[in-house]
Amino acid sequence: MSDVGDNGLRIPWSALSGMSADKTSETTLYTVNDSAFKKSQIFTIDTSGYSPAVITKAMYITDTNDVLAAVQPRGTVTEDGVDNEFSADDIAAMVNDDKTVNIDQEGIVAVSDGFWIATEGSGTVDDPKRPIKTLSLLFKTDKNGVIEQVVTLPDEVNDIQLRFGFEGVTVNDDEDHVIVAFQRAWGNEANPRIGIYNTADGTWKFAYYPLDARESQLGGWVGLSDISNAGGGNYLVLERDNQGGLDSAIKRIYSINLGNDIEDGVTLEKSLVLDLVDSIKTTGAPLYEKLEGLAYTPEGNVWLSVDNDGVSEVPGETQLWNLGQIYTAPPIESVEETTEAPSG
Image (tube, rainbow, N blue to C red; front, side, top):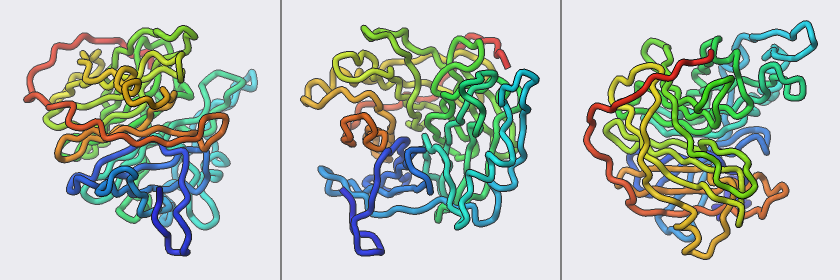
């Protein structure tokens, strides 16, 4: 449910995607809405009276200082007419006259001086049916939602963009590296990337996350939905298929270890933390397709949320669960990795 806003009405919300805990408050979560709505917002959730939790604040993200507006176009329209261009018109469409923005938020992490937000790109390179409209972008905002920085991927990675882009973001313990999960593998790569952005020098590294094979009777695909820092170089990753109900087979939380300075191009090892299909069945709740929000709190509680897609052709329910202290991070240790050659 939601609290009463400044206009005297309940705060409206829907289509919640990524989620983050507040590093200083056990009972505060943050979440964002995705591209089902324009004028993108950050929501604050109070879980102190859990069941139901209450959305107490909604804050628009704004491009007050024209940071997003100044992002440079890239790409071209091919000789065959395939639109691979992130154009000036595309960028202009992301910023409204009142400086609010229209972005496909799929991840958020609260940091000491604001937020990092991951947005999923729109379009697939060299696919005439899915022209490039936006890139997968990282946004840094202050505590009031004002955009301070927009980070793009390296050109060679943007050159293989798939429409299943950023889907979850977190930071390391020192907040000097931003970690993003790609939902699915791009180009000819076997596995989706985990991107690691160094805020000090503006460089990227990439590791590869080994997805589970499809298990649903309907096939579909398997991808990543969110990532959350669990401390000491350890991260929780939400992995799911794109099926719901009786057809759903993979809704799982895994842990990975990125250590302090992981080698570029490695394929990670992962450890199962919780099979959510089994856990949700015991509650009697439906097996929703889009488990999309994952947050690890200061006391080690793990929160999970459902994206209701703006109630478009879906049951329309948003569920928020406290899974409890299901994971204790081990101390940092060396991680054995294999190297996967990037295609971009």
